[in-house]
Length: 308
Image (cartoon, rainbow, N blue to C red; front, side, top):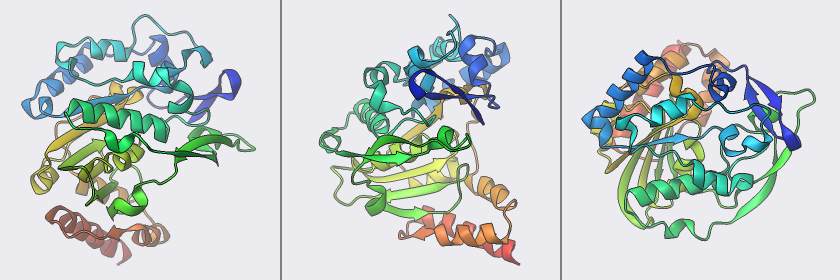
């Protein structure tokens, strides 16, 4: 992953496998086959019952800081024009209103504040109150971000983070897998809404899942880029299912079902012994639900196999 220097020290993604610059400039559009795949996916009854959210690309939020001109037609425009995409949440207007706090100069992702905004939009769609998000406080912190660490020397900057991140108190399960294959589960006995939410998202859901645990009693998050795991859903039995991906990923239409255990198995097969030991140290198991017992046992067995 490389970067482009924008205006005012803001960096943007370049030369990534999703061709984000070409998407923005209209050189990479969705093919008829890709649009058909998206339409088929969004038309499935199992998908229509979910909340589907696409996190906007940073350059869409601050086009005045980006060194490229936006095309009249881009992949996100093509996708949102599909009749089956009428209920897709693409919160670009809301995030633009608070662009300087929703995104940051040295990272491709939204900030904690941007995640809170997205979480509030989801809760409103689900018809649940968002009072738990009204009085959150943020503190400045130096950070590199996934774009600041791409230069030599690395560049650091300041951004605002949640002062009291609910991850510290509410995270009861972490399978230790980084990125794809990650599973986190949050429990909040004091949550105002006694419901269970399952999120199948990407790295934008890391802070959004934490925020949603302030509203809902139980939040399950798996890093699958909007691909649901029907086996886990049958075990978790969530009241609500949220599918989340980000704008640059939409050139690859998601599958209607995935297997989080198989993703973890494939990821673990690439780990060396030291990486497996580091994974074992990251595992958190403070929950005894059927789903977490299933996921935890699978990860432990995979770890043991890797160590043999």
